[in-house]
Image (tube, rainbow, N blue to C red):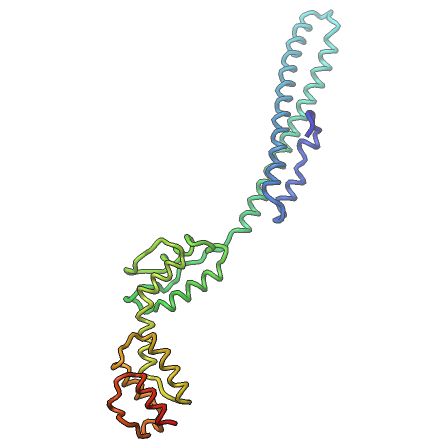
Length: 272
């Protein structure tokens, strides 16, 4: 901007007003433009102050001239004062127009900001209460992940996720301020383990051979490795799950087998 900016340079804020409505325009660019206009406005205010001082000085000179009716400066001073007064009025009108335009830019920036506010999800209506509640940890974790996926903008960091999770809990679950992955792992260790054990126990006791012996053994071994049961405890569900066809086949020393592996080998031999 030049040292003596024009009125258009000083007070035309049409461009920032339009930019404020465009979400693709950087706010910093708009603020830089406004800052330049504010500096020019300060310069204009200094000019107005100088004009007002000049008016006062010339008004005093006019009073002195009027004391001497013969003075030839009366008409000249009167014309100069009227010109300065008109100029001062024009500057004040431009100043008012500038502030009105500035307010328009601010209002549009504010509206633009409000249009981009992210939705903040409410905590889960049914709270996770650990062992005292009806909601399992698996269900609780699933609901959290659903909320995180749906509200990515408002739940985009660990702090937001933990706060949301804590607001969705009641009772006495321990609270850990850590990254969400660690927080979820700790809760799963505390409250999810029993759910998995119960599920595995249920599958072991309800498992039945419906296909080949190799398939049944593979499925049983998978559950066996995750159950934590000892060998004697596993013998009964393994025998119970065998098909009726295998159960009726003769197996030497069937009742003397002490390990699941021995039982699997005997059942396979008898089936073959």
